[in-house]
Length: 70
Image (cartoon, rainbow, N blue to C red; front, side):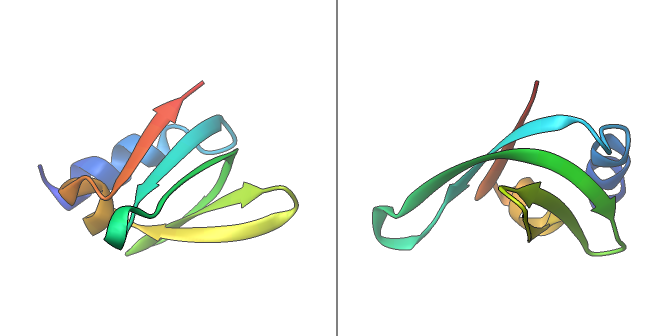
């Protein structure tokens, strides 16, 4: 996968609801539900319960972050 392809796909879903699954180290996994609010050159931000969290495209490519669009 190409980073530009991922960025363009996420940009199509700005202001859409998304389920974000983060697979961390040592079996620490997190699931967030929020709205994609901004797309930047190296990261994108999601509004989750009134606060912004940022994620980078490289983590989406490697599978450490998985997005499910609602």
